[in-house]
Length: 121
Image (cartoon, rainbow, N blue to C red; front, side, top):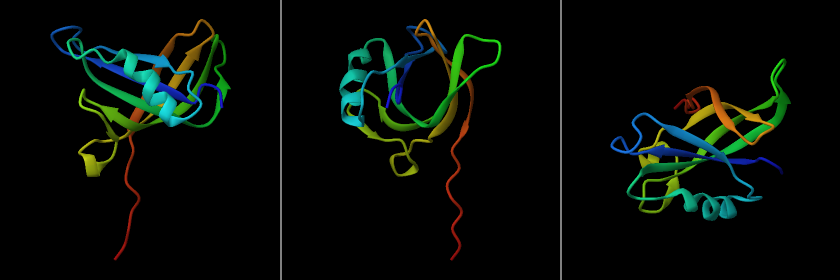
């Protein structure tokens, strides 16, 4: 599936304060996405990497040369290896609406926390 994975690159505060870059990955599966995303891990400048996986189809944005799709955090790397982005690993997953422009630029449009499913006892 094309454009299935995005990496979010969160830079260290002493390098680029409050800056997160998004890059589209060419990977066709999660293992390849992990390998491809690791090229962005520079422990001197990057605080964390998050791999986000697309859910559903991308749709054309009216009046803009971009497509919009929903992505959810699945893996996180803080410089010491990959782990699931979930409460068990003290990570809060986010669901993000991303815009992918025809020139390859990726931008965050909207995001919200993924709420755990309600369970009753």
